[in-house]
Image (tube, rainbow, N blue to C red; front, side, top):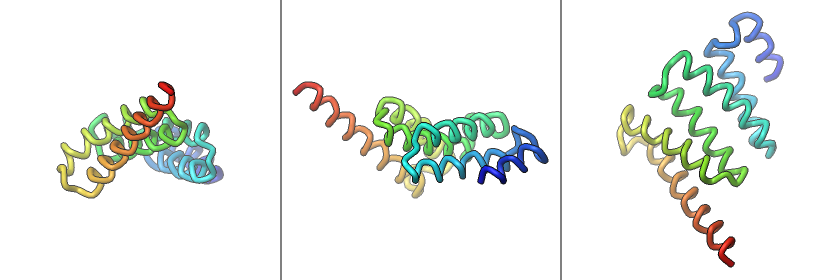
Length: 126
């Protein structure tokens, strides 16, 4: 993926949607490897490109927010994860509706995040 990123950046430029896809693919691989900080960087770069190309309320932007939210959850950043997932949900509800599978998946991730936050707060109180 890094070679593909290098080629995309050279041929298409840093802000092209295909370059964004490379950043996201690298983030996916790094996240699967448990390298969440590195995955977060890739996802944030993808988000920045999508914001420039598609704007705040586009489905591709929502996908980036979702990826960022999940990696934040994996890092234990529940507050940040919740913010990112809420942004995802807002876009999906507006664009796809409340019953769409992507919206349902996002709601499940939000519920998991909230449960994790509650467990974390209980552990701090002990």
